[in-house]
Amino acid sequence: MSNWIRIASVEECSPGNACELVAGDRIIALFNVDGEFHALDGICPHQGGPLGKGKLTGCIVTCPWHGWQFDVQTGQHQTSVSLLHSKFPVKVEGDSVLVDLDA
Image (tube, rainbow, N blue to C red; front, side, top):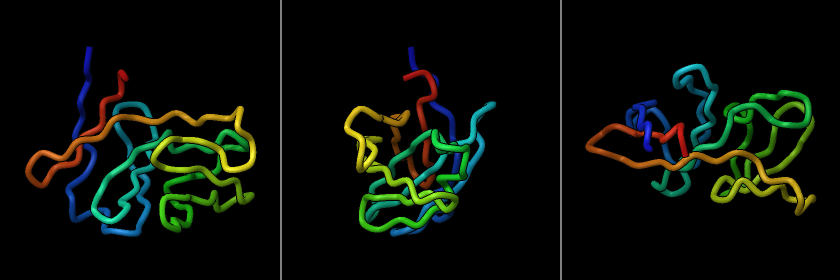
């Protein structure tokens, strides 16, 4: 079952940027990679850093606290293949960005 929730307008997260947003009771990190949106759990699994406030380089986000890096398209940690961060499906309807929190 899907639980699509509007978390932002397209304009709120411009290309090449990361945004920290709240959806329901979760913090979501939204990323705009060349006009394509991706969403990860906003809390870094290392020590709880805010991924939505990290630096986005291409499709790699770097946690601002301790430098952990994740591919925003897959959730894959960049140095540990066994670590996969929670990713949420994203869709755009009109000027709204929606995430499916139940996926």
